[in-house]
Length: 589
Image (cartoon, rainbow, N blue to C red; front, side, top):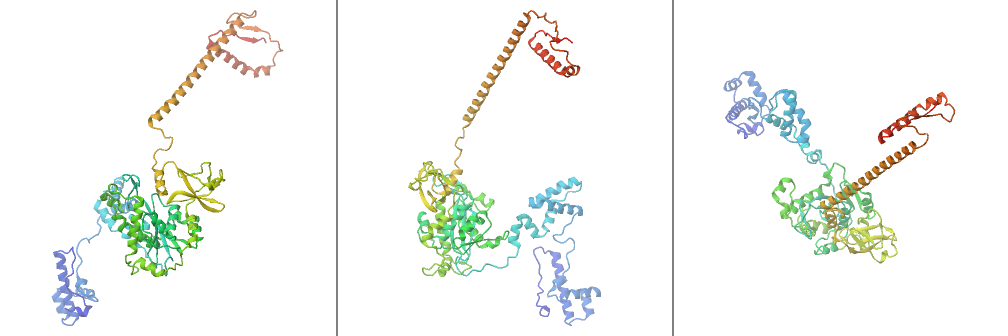
């Protein structure tokens, strides 16, 4: 009724979903009090009359007046609900302390209410105190700072991406001024070219986008994780015209007209991007490579956004898509629906990129094709590489074999193939630098006298694919290594070794027995010979004879006691072994 004088507020009852009869009663009472006080402040009621209507004391009336100063509606006078406030915690102090302690120890690893509750139960039993209930643990965790909870659940990097302030943006004025590149696994299963019933797995895709025009400049699909090969092939599709590439894929040559030398290539800090070889090779063609600061993923936001949209709007619509997470994957039956080969996927991606280039972009107000053509009107292309340098550029970025290859009489052996030709005729036994084209293994590049020259494949022993990605996958899936035995073969080889060891042991034992028997026989003959000599004594009677040498000195005699005893022991042992009488010979003193 007096809203205009108090900020234009409303006296309508304002409630939420938790409002009940008691809440309504408190709001009606507050509105009545508000109207009376507004009449008093407007001079329509005297002080005592207002106190009588409200049925409050003078001091209470003063407090109501203080609350109404600056208020725009009655809500300033609504009484607070009696009892515990919604969301407040009620529990023993030691239980709350225990929950806090277990939360700090375990929530970062378990990331669930149940995980913290389980830890609380264990620790409460150890401390011999009552266990906190699951709902108390849950309410306590929910009462904590949402930023902290998100960071513990999703990691610090994810928290920075979602919660940190991202001030500034990259401003460009021309096409190819700033090009972002990145890799990601594709949410799609592909099948074998030769046997479509065999699922190969999820490939990786490398993409490049021009920041100024939002045009996609190139992509490379690989069955194995990103490497220098991925970067080399991506650079070729970015810089060089795509006519020959599209023709090789069975596509119209004018389907993808965007290409050229970037002024700056911006990437993350993956090892294939920070490689000195990549950075220096790019610099030799007036291309600067920059890397975003570690931990600041949003600096690569445009390529990340492109990858996300390509996954969502392109790949996820294809049969064999796996979805972005395990929950989506369970519903998709990806392996049963997979049907795209690597070559088929390349064709589909080119057509989808063409559709993207012809679609109006929200950041540009026009399509990427129109933005590109406005920068390169007519036939002039300031960042186009001269045609005479095309091969030089390709050969520079093609992957190189780490070690030099030796030229054998059959040629150079690589990729389970032999490469040979007239160029190698005078270079047998020489070691040469070798590069290769990942899209075509029907030839290699050999550095001869400072120039890269082609040498064709003359023999493909195992009929391997000429596509490097398919060849690498075939090598991984080739099965058992040459020389691998079957279980029966392994058992037979084991028996062979056992038989060999058995024969060696039998022969060694036989030789020992024969040697022992010969020793006994020789000893027996010696004893018989001695017994027949004239000076021999009766068996068992010691023989005493005077020593031919002079009497031994006392010290020398003492020194020889040990050797004499040792000799006696040895003779005694021999006598026991051969069951012969022992005859002692001693020197006379």
